[in-house]
Structures are given as C-alpha cells and as structure tokens.
Picture 1 (cartoon, rainbow, N blue to C red):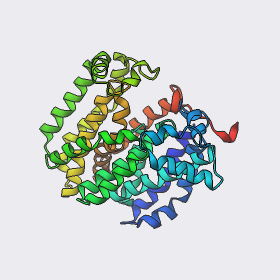
Picture 2 (cartoon, rainbow, N blue to C red):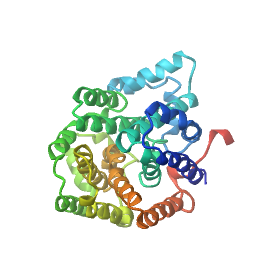
Picture 3 (cartoon, one colour):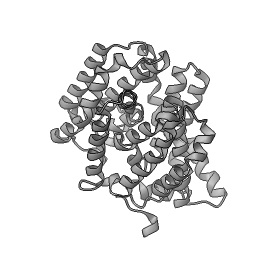
Picture 4 (cartoon, rainbow, N blue to C red):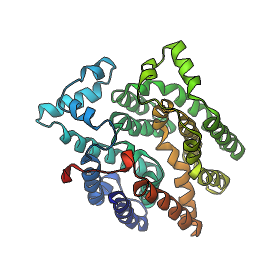
Length: 355
C-alpha cells in the first residue's frame, strides 16, 4: 500500500508544475522536497527488501570491501569509507544512496521532459519500469544505471567529456558498466534512424528472442569462454519459464502504439535521437529478460526503455485524448496488482521504522 500512496502523492505534487512553462532544476528540488523526503524514507528505510540487503549492511559497515577494490569499483569503496570516516554506518548509507538516486532521477527527467511533463515521467518510472523497486536490491548496479542513463543524454548532446566522465563514474559503482560502451557506440551510430518500420522489426525480433532463447545456450558460451562463469554454479541463475516470459508482454501494446504514433510527435532532432535510442534500449531490455544472467545487463537500459511510453503519454496529454487516461489507468492497475495481491521480492515492502 505504501507504494500506491507514494505514486499518487508524488505525481499529484509534480502535476502542479504542469501549469508552468519551465522551472529550473534548483527550484524543482526545493519544490519537490516532500517527494524527496518520502522517497528517502521509503527507499532508504527498507528492511530486508530483496536478497542483497544483508550483504550491503555488511559492506556499509566497511567490511568485505576488498572484493569491490579488486574489481575496480573505487567510487563505491570511497563512498563507503568516506561516510564511515564521518561516523555513518549500516542503514545510514541506504538513506544517503536513496537521496543520491532521487536527485539523479529528477535531473534526468527535468533535462529530458522539462518540469511541465515531469509528473508523467515520474508515474511511468514507478508504475512501468522496475527500477523504483529493484534499486532496493541491486543497489550498486542501479546507481550505475542512473549514471549510465545520464551518460547517454550527454552523448546525444555531443558533450563527450561529460558522457565519458559519467561512464567512468558508473563503472566505479559497478564494474559491469565496462561492457556498455560498445552498445553505446552502436546506438550512437543508429541514432538518426527514426523509422517506424525499423522500430517494428527490432521490437518483433527482441520479442521472438525472448520467447525462443534457452538458458543452456548462454551456459555453453560461458563455459567455453570463461566469461562470468562464476554464475554457472550460482543460486541466482534459474531457467526463465515460458509463462514467466509471456507475462513480460503485458506492456508491449503500449510500446507498439507509441511507435505507431511516432510520426505525430513533432520532436526536435535531440528528442528524435533519444526516441530511437530508447526503442533500441527497450529491445535490449526485453531481450535480456530471457535469462536471469542477461537480466543483470538489461537493467542498465530500464530507465531509457521508459521513454517511448512517456513520449506517447505526453502527446496524448497535449491532444487531450481520452486514451491518456486509459493508459494511465491500465498501468496503474497492473502496478497495483504487483504491489498488493502478487507482491513478492522487492515489491513486498518492509521498513526499518516498524522493526
């Protein structure tokens, strides 16, 4: 129930900004203080949400950091050691990470959609993507995801040094980011391909891949190459069943409809490029759901994968189209089921304030 209250509360406050043309980032932060505080209360105040919580409690006490030092995750190590030096340990660091994440998210949303449509982005981020919940489990990787998403925006703006800086910063939180630059260069090469037929084809291919992919194919590759072969004996690795895969199709019609309407959006060059990148990101994200191992890689594209839905909703909102409210209701009902009747893992919330 706390999740449903938060999405209604936060989007209602941000909707007030839709009546103004634009608000600067600093002013946005001041206006959003209630949203930020409740976010920190929820995300930072988590208690055994997901499987990684006890591991991070140990890390935040300054123990076992040698593993991160060995893999080059120096920004995370310095973050923990620096705060430990200041007398902050354990649960304290969950609150600080939560604050860092909400500031990054608001910066990303304001930069891409302006404050006028930030309430739509925030709603889609919570109800449509899994980031709001999964960040309580894969903490380092989701900080890296926020930073990677901003790196993509800087790349599209041709601010290459900032892009590189954010990629390095992201890699300092989770070493797997170092796998992303090749994909990023491929995206950049395709950024000007704003074509409905192309979008339909790659979405169809990604969905077919999701359905037919077998985990044993990846196991064979990992065994032969030695690439991430430590996961072969991990309890984390499980076969993704066909029924589980089919449930991933629940939001596909919205993405397809967004593509169908893509020639109506009247986007500038920057947003056209971002839209293309976001459809590609959606395809990577949905393809990676075929495997529990690949899903760790697909996480990096989960924020970018929201953008086609956000742009569709902004278009419908501007046009005062009744479909806007149907899609909002559809996404909200699915989300409500996830966090109530079918709540498991990161969707089943517990708080330190009640333990």
